[in-house]
Amino acid sequence: MTGLLVGSMKDKVISMTDQIDEKTIEQNFEQDEDFVLNIRGLKVYFELRKRGFQHAGFVHAVDNVDLRLRRGETIAIVGESGCGKTSLMKTILRLNTPTGGEIEFDGEIINDLKSDALKNVRRKIGYVQQDPYGALAPFMNVRTILEEPLIVNGVKDKQERFDRVVKVLEEVRMTPVEDFLEKFPHQLSGGQQQRIVIARAMILDPILLVADEPVSMLDASVRVEILKLLRSLQEEHNLAVIYITHDLATVRYFSEYIYVMYAGQIIEKAPESDLINHTAHPYTHALLAATSDPDPKNVDEFQDVPPGEPPSLVKPPEGCRFHPRCPHMIADLCDKEVPLEFEIAEKHLVHCWLFRDKAVAK
Ligand SMILES: Nc1ncnc2c1ncn2[C@@H]1O[C@H](COP(=O)(O)OP(=O)(O)OP(=O)(O)O)[C@@H](O)[C@H]1O
Ligand code: SF4
Ligand SMILES: [Mg+2]
Image (cartoon, rainbow, N blue to C red):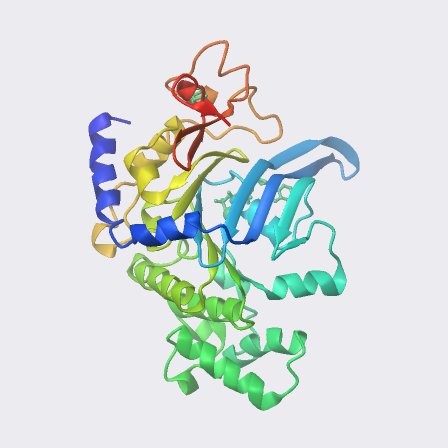
């Protein structure tokens, strides 16, 4: 990673961030209102088994993660493949069981909820999952795909269901609606399929939307449209949004705040422009160097990947998990001690020993 290269990529990302309204950011973080989501010390470990029954260790997919989000706020979680982003999201939806820590959603601890209580929580969270093709049942048409969550959640009146299906299709700009109602997924383009996935996530009027790599499987030509659609839904419905991506460039469409995840842990978090302009953690620098531009005109730019291999999550490296790849590793410290969290500027937190003299440990 050369300084020059990183510099020019930063300029690119910065130039793309001017849509974010600084005042909104300040207001969102200054008000002391309740959190929609408040995650404390979350751990999600998957047990590995040899020959089906012998214990063979754990995959530490999420390890000690804190995350807070208010109504109307958007955050991005950024990190390379396998760092635990989907595991974290599936745990918020309680599709995974937390191993430790606490998930408070809409004022309620949801770690151990079951049956109807859990259904009630899931109703309030819209989930745009990573793979739009796998998300839609091939034998159901658009109308039945969108009606299903309403039926499952007790909307008995047929006309009401139909009206809500029409309304949500209009919201995701699938118009004229009658052209799409009877279509099956294979009769839709990738972008249209993703709009249906988004419509299904929105149809129960959620308060939190979780979008897991919503554009990574799509053609470059439709990525920006889908990101803009998500942003406008967020604004119209005052949604809390968690946007997951491996690509920092796409966060400009959403995020007031960015969390950078590495090997199951959050290693840096900051308001979006602060993270881009005053990047602290060496891994975030590497991610910036790997930033691509979602605009189809620039699709071939910035396709580097961070150097080195992500570590095993079964036996993560001692001390700082990034130390085997880090160009600034401090021997006998980084390879032995887990970095504390240092606040290097207001709301800019980093887990890295490089900042031990410059900041107050949290
Ligand atoms: N159900 C599971 N059982 C065992 N291991 C799992 C399970 N789900 C995920 N993992 C492991 O947890 C780790 C994190 O996976 P996860 O899918 O959360 O990563 P990710 O950041 O979403 O990656 P990507 O960007 O490729 O989607 C990986 O090592 C993965 O193999
Ligand atoms: S704690 Fe050490 S190894 Fe980890 S990122 Fe900072 S300097 Fe690199
Ligand atoms: Mg994933």
